Structures are given as structure tokens and as C-alpha cells.
Length: 213
Image 1 (cartoon, helix red, strand yellow):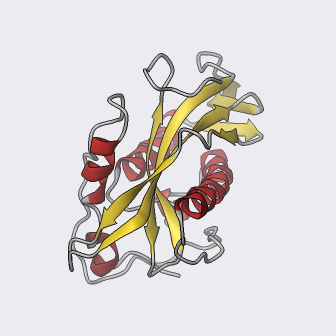
Image 2 (cartoon, rainbow, N blue to C red):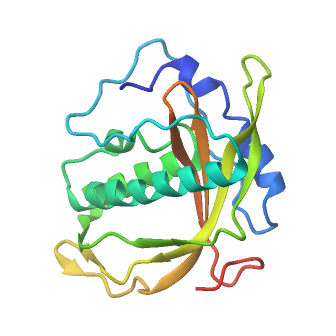
């Protein structure tokens, strides 16, 4: 599946501002990158992981559950991306919404792999969702004005990186804190590609409204 057409990325990007308005005051600012219009799709990278297709949610609990499943799969794909110096950001194109803050973070991660020889080994972070704090927000399609009342999910939970070893040029980087940390993660649903895509992630240690981890 190739998801890098202008039609695919232009329709719902404005939802980020809507989601952040609805979030707690500690949410991250709107994305710094905008998708560029192009009629030429990006080639599918060899071996890129994919999501199992999932139908549009029928209610809020179904939306939160499906978004959680997608995020857990993303964490495994992200770990594989960080561990392999040969993998570029396109490896995550079936999990990350283009033009968002998460796309920028993954590009920065790739730059660090190249310039500083950063890597990981061990196990990916584990995710413990907080169902009580997680919620759904509406998603507006800019191209036609249609609103999907269940199209965006703000997940809250704890991400535990205890099993991950962070490396710089083959040596463990002990400056990175280890443990379970509170996070807010934003995901958007694409009816066209039948999947949930990560648009933002915020580490919430010390922030008001953070889940207890």
C-alpha cells in the first residue's frame, strides 16, 4: 500500500489544531512541517511493516481500542527503525501521518542515526494505556468539509523503556532516563487506508493531567 499522494495527505491535516485545542493545556504545539503537494507517490520501501486493515470505529471505545492496537504496533516498528542504520523514515510510512510532528521526530531520529550513530538494542518500549484519560475528537476533512466524529484519538498511558538499551556509536548512552513515563499520543484514522496513524507524541512527566506511571 502506498499512501503518499497529495489527496491522501491534504484532507485532514487541520485536525491537529482541533485536537490540541481539545487536549489538556500541556499538549504540544501544532506541527512545524506541512505536507507538500505532489502527484508523484513515494515508492514503497522494501520490507516496510504494514497495519492490518481496520474498519472505521462505531463508537468511542472501539476507536480508542483500535488506536491503542495501532500504537503498540508502531512502537515495535519504531524500535526496528531505530535499531537498523539502513532504514530511513519511509520505513514507518504505514504508521506515521505525513507532515505532522511525529514525521518530523522520525526524520530527526534518522538524522541522528546517520550523524551520531545512534541505535537501540534489546526490546521496544512497552505501552500501558490509561483508558479513563484517553478520549476521541472529531476529524475534519479539509477537501470536502466532512466531519468524522470518531476520527481522532488522544491516548494517554505509560511507556516503559526499561528493556531498551540506547547506544551511541556502539556504546550505551546512560544519559537517557530509564523507566515508565507518562505520554499523550495522538492518532488519526484514514478511511482510505483503513488504519490509525500517529501524528504526535508528548512525554508528560511533571505536567498537569499526566497519567500516573
